[in-house]
Length: 310
Image (cartoon, rainbow, N blue to C red):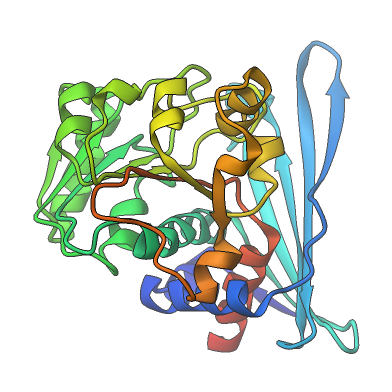
């Protein structure tokens, strides 16, 4: 069985190829049970979480499972809070093919899925991207979206201004025209595409700031209590999801559904329907909103690309 390093993962996941692999996987379909959540209690420390995300595809001949450990107490000893690995296997024989570092893979397939959705939902002439959040995923968003859009300007907003400035510098060094945003409200009002990848529990994007024709990409909320946008933003938008799990796992949609702000019928389509390519999902004046929570078939598509490249 081959072991694939983080460096090899990065080398074998160029966004142009990754986005098309994700598109092919959603168009063809795969089996992906709901992820397994297991809480591991620890006396005197925050609980840890074990996540298992399996998927397999007969048409591709591959299957795999991602194992993720979320250990908040690691921050106290200078270790990453999240450790992730991916095991790829032969779907027909069950033979294990390779084990790879999945932390970088997860960040890249997340950004790639958002860029894929935006290719259907954002205006093709979008020239101004706002990234809210300067973490691991936020840093990938400009590179992924630039495969589908020609941006004149990339705005970065982050609560921690040191991290904001560091990401702006890295993006400028890569050849982009990146600018740090001081006012989140002003940045939202002037952007064509707004991508949020934060860990906020309370909404930071207000619906009253949104403008006709914008596209909003929401990544950060991954628990039933987390939100990045308020009810007005949800109410004003045409809503799309990566999968129906977003209605259960994320407070972004679960809370407005429970409170009656929207009905489930307000969810227009998932990535499965978007990638079927049979319909134009927006008009030039629509505000479109894409909510993702991540899905095991995205991991499988990325892992297949890495393995075949190796």
